[in-house]
Length: 396
Image (cartoon, rainbow, N blue to C red; front, top):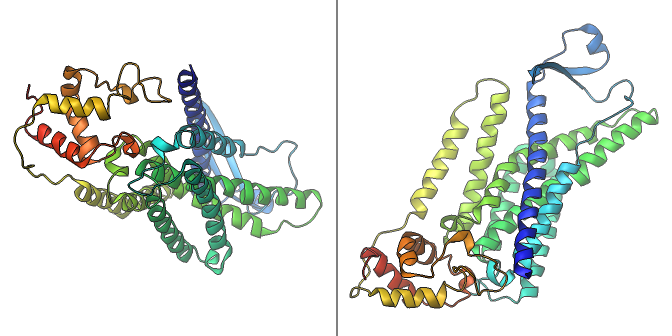
């Protein structure tokens, strides 16, 4: 019953996280587009009111006119809409998922003894510490003199993220490292909203209510962090789905995969932002495609014929039963599992042969299974599975 309830809790949290994330990302993308699409106001009276840009749009059968003030309007409206809870709930549900899936099952999804033998409490402490340290380093860089130069700050942040990716993959298994990389970035993005953007907007509103001129530094800081968030969005989305693809997270170059796809995702976003202002150049998309192609080449399995006599299926079945079937069965015996991961069953000879390609990919090429090698699959057993697959995986 406990595994059943945990399974449903995970499903509900994932759904809530997805819904909140769509709302946050949608609002973020819309306002970046809006800022980049504003045109100078045509009417003199609008310019006199401090309007810096305007935009006409049609959607859903209606016409809309949006205005942006250079700093603040002459007076506040009765009702002012804020955009913050989308970000907060995305982080809250994401952190809850991190606890439920990765900290409650740290032995399976977070710890890999071949990377670093950690106690469960140590792994959880390092995971939580990475969130705190990541935000602190990012905030320090933004508040340093580098923060006044966007290009220099971007270079420093890339070096920081590369170091973060490398460090996490030296501590956790690939799946845990990837999700914590995304969690650090997601925490930075949520902190930008809660610690910089919203307090700055509150200060602008407070100044107007008190009859003081608003300080433009709050608007400048909020804009900078909002831009950071939009370029970090696609890398975070990649880490959210990466746990399903061992080819990426289980590679010995996994930290480089994180860095490369962070850069590629940011470049794709650069292209979309440029597109808001007209016909964009092709170089951001071309560079992103080149990075992805280089990754495909780097991670591609190198074909080699394993030495040794033909493998009897009985030997293969023995390995699968001993190392895999406790999870991949109609009724998993592994603690915390209510059903086989991804619905893959390996409890009969027919099903083992049916999933031969996936078995080879996950246990031999990616070496992601068993997760954290919890069932202690030996190197000799991996070689045996490799020989069986390359011989046709159909030997009776």
